[in-house]
Amino acid sequence: MSIITDSQLVETDVSSIKNQKLINKDLAPIKLAERSWGTYAIAALWIGMSVNIPTYMLASGLISGGMNWWQALLTIGLGNLIVLIPMVLNAHAGTKYGIPFPVLARASFGTKGSNIPALLRAVVACGWFGIQTWIGGQAINSLIILLLPEWAIFSFGPAIGFLLFWAMNVYFIVKGIESIKWLESYGAPFLLLVGLGLLIWAYVNAGGFGPILSQPSKFKTAGEFWRFFIPSLTGMVGFWATLSLNIPDFTRFAKSQKSQVVGQALGLPPAMVMFSFIGIAVTSATVIIFGEAIWDPVVLLSKFESPVVVLISLLSLIVATLTTNIAANVVSPANDFANLSPKHISFVKGGLLTAVLGIAMMPWKLLSDYSAYIFGWLIGYSSFLGPIAGILICDYFIIRKRNLNSKDLYDPNGEYKYSKGFNIKAIYALAAGVFVALIGLFVDELRFLYDYAWFVGFAVAFVVYWVLMNKKNIYK
Image (cartoon, rainbow, N blue to C red):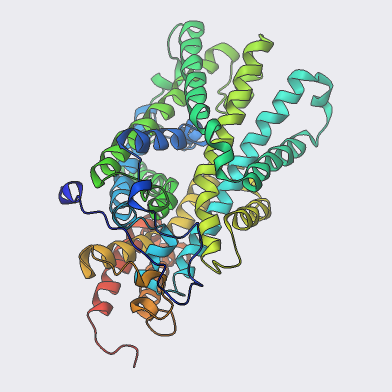
């Protein structure tokens, strides 16, 4: 693969640009000397972000919908292999030029137009921030009940836990990303150890992995299976469709293209499949041990008899969820919001805005049932993110052949000014991709377009952008 052997890394000096309104320290290009992340660091980043409670619970919706355990695991694995492709491609520019996602988007959308994809990405991150915060809040609520059993009688306990965990996130946002680095080093391994511990516990106490692993698929015909599989696969792609856009926010610190490609390949799909399997196997055992399927690890841990085990496990869940939330759902939207006005919006201000919007998006409703989560949330936003990915990849790899005028990405009067800061061709392509993908949501005969929302949006936007960028004088 040629991008692996592409060893050219570019350092950009933007100090000579007279108008500095498109630059702040968070959006500025990373210097070559500061690009120190090797293969292990990139893989560890992905393992850290993949090993979280939503991943553990991911297969539950698929099995509830009718899949057996291996069909669910295959769907998750295939979805992550697919999303790895745009992940690696969009990461290339970040590694080569040391630039974050909002700055890369300026090449295709324009210096002002880049705010459109950046804000679309940021809004989704706010939703994910809320989801992770709600899950972490439930762990805190369970921890309080462990320490103070009387707390269980209060109906507002989950809401209090949510607000407490939200406040913890805000604390680290205000302190800055450096303040959480030591937690990031230990949080994910702790959660992985908790998962492996649960796996061993389940196997020993259930005498093997029980009903769910032996449960057949509920689909009676191949047609029934494919009608559920297709939107589910889109949902699995949608799970990381956000990071497939803003992955340059992280890979701009990579040592080489080989480091980012191999690191992501080793870190993302294996971690997702392994931790999802732990969720499936442990839940299978709970049917035997407790007489019911318990998919939520927080609920499961609360049933353990040893207070010490529960205390350590819940604390691990809280720390790991906190670090995942900061890395996956604060870094990107903070940069995206900063792109609106780099001189006035810092990382801290962008992070605080993310936290507020995370509450406004009511994550408890997004997690209310598997259909709302997979077919509403994951597929719905993938119809917007797929077209953005199509435009970015087409622009960087097809139109520009991996060559950017990196200095002009920060110059309001440079090459990427287009028409008053907007590349109308990219906006047309984005609108076309979203429109076609969403038609299936309103026209039953075209439902397949929505079921394939990310793929359809990506393909339509890619082609439309390529055609328009080869047309002349569109601005006149």
